Length: 271
Length: 218
Image 1 (cartoon, rainbow over the protein chains, first blue to last red):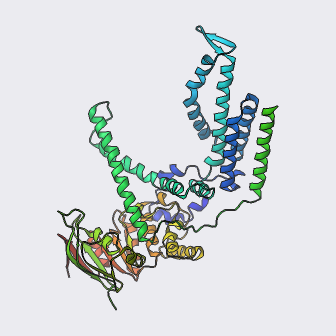
Image 2: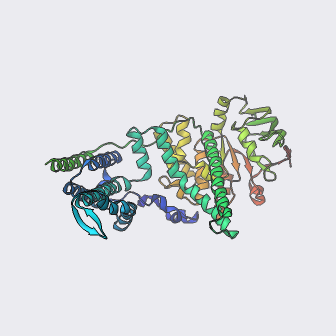
Image 3: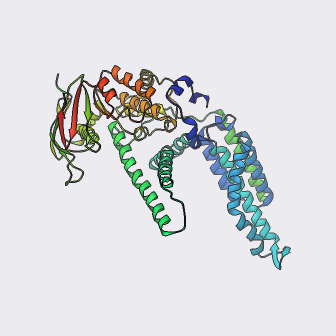
C-alpha cells in the first residue's frame, strides 16, 4: 500500500510513529490474483469450501482439498513463515486429540505400544481431522485472512450480516489498539511499583483491579466517543462515502473455477 | 450582531453535594477568541458539553445563535454550528480512515457523497494534510491525530469552535503549526488551556472558572 505515505516530508514534520502500531493491519492487501477479487467473492468461496470439506470423509479427497487450499494460498501470495506459524498453532491445539484417537477407536490393530493397540480406523480418523482442519484454515487464511480488516467488515455487512454486528466488529478493530495501549500503561505503572506476578492473594487482587480499571476506562471512553459522534450529528446510522464494490469478470471466473474444484472433490468422494 | 452564545445563571452538578457550576453566566460574540482557564476539575469541559446540549443544566438558560435551546432537538443545530475539539483525539477519530472520519459530519448533515468528498479534500488541504485521506486513523501520531480531529470539526463548517486543551501533549513544532492554523481561522472560539504563551497569542478575552462561577479577567 504505497498510497499510505504520499507525503513523507509532511509526515516526518509531525513526528510519524506509524511503525509501532502496525501490528493490527499486518495483513494489508497484497498484490496477486486473489486481491483483485471482490471481498464478497472471497468470503463466499471460503465459506462454501469450508462447508464442503467438513462433509468429506475419504482421505484421498481430503488430501486434494488440502492441495486446493495450498494453490489458493500461493495465488494469494501468503508469506510462508507467518502462515506456517498460524497452521502450527492450530495443529498444536489438536495434537493431543490426534494422538489419542488411534488408541481409543476400536478396529484392526496397526501397531502395539506398551500393550496399547493403535487401530487403523483410528489413525484414518485422526488423519481426516488433521486434513480437514488444515484445508479449511489455509483456505480461510488465503481468501479472507489476506483481506483488509475494514473491507472484511463492509463485505460482511453487504452479505447480510446484521448492521450492529458489523459496527461492533469495526469499532473493535478501531479501538483494540487504544485499549491495548491503556492496558500496557497500567501494567507499566504496576511494574514501576515493583509488582511481579506471583500466585498469591495480592497478585490476584491486583490483576482483578487492573482488569476492573480497564473496564471502567473503556466504558468512559465509549461514552466520550458517543458524545463526540453526537457533536457531529450522529443519529444512529452510518452514512457511507464509498461506491460499493461490484462483482466483475475476475469474480465470475474465480467463482467458476472454485465451483469446478468443489464439484470434482464431491465426485471423487462419491466414487 | 447578536452573540453566538448567551448562558444565564447556569447550575450543574454530577453529584448533588458537589456542584460543578453554580449560577454561572457566559457570552460569546462573533469574532471573539475567549480563553477559558481554571484549575483541574473546575468544570471547563462540562461547560462545553452544556453549551452543545450533551449535558442539561439544572437551572439557567442557554441561548445559542439567537434562539433559546432546551430540548435535544434544539441542540441538533447548535452542534452543527459549534464544534468541539475533544481533549483526547482518539475519542473523536473513530472511523478506519481519515477521509471517512472527516466526511462523517458532513454526511450526517445531509451532504451527498460527492460533496462530502470535496469537503474532505478542501478541509485537509486547508490544514496542510493533503494526501492523508487513506491513512489509518489509529496509526497516526499524536500531532497528526490532533490536526485530523480539527479537520473533522472544521468539515462541519461551524461558526464557533470549542477547543478543549488543543495544544496539550503536542511537541513544539506541531504546537506552533496548530497555533498558526487557529490564528488564521475566522471562527469565534472558546479555548480551554493551561498554556500561557499559547493563550497570549490567541486570546482576545479571558474568563476564569473557579468554584462554579465564571469571572472576566480583563
